[in-house]
Image (cartoon, rainbow, N blue to C red):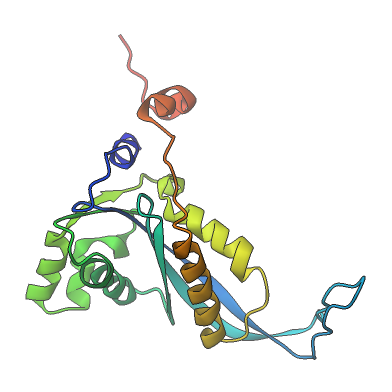
Length: 208
């Protein structure tokens, strides 16, 4: 926890960007009946019946100091899918960075070794060489600022029925473009000192 807090407080350096990564699923739901559009004094009406069209995965790549985020929609959330997303971070989104400070959850599919399931050995080794990885502690995924962006995405874009992957991709892309245009940033205020006071019970007890 203290490690993540200190990383997020580092002075901004474009050659060493701070990047947070997270993932979530979205159930695709289609309408079985025609939606009644909104009218003066009445809201849009949906029928309670719906059609399940499967589940898609979304990756969130968020650079808080730059106020830039990228949403990638995939069919699944396997180690291979995540490996492709990590390569996008190093090669597509931040190709000029000397080293990328990457914050993400501490899951087994998030280990650099999972890259070998997706790429040849030389490629699987090249990618983590550009990364300085910091994992959030167990039950501490809230320290990953990509979760904040997912919360905003859910409220502003995904709190409705989305029937298929193409619609999901378009809605996510529109949201991403609009938010990036405004350069919406997150200023980290949770310090190590705060953690030692507010979360004192989580620290081990030292008996004299």
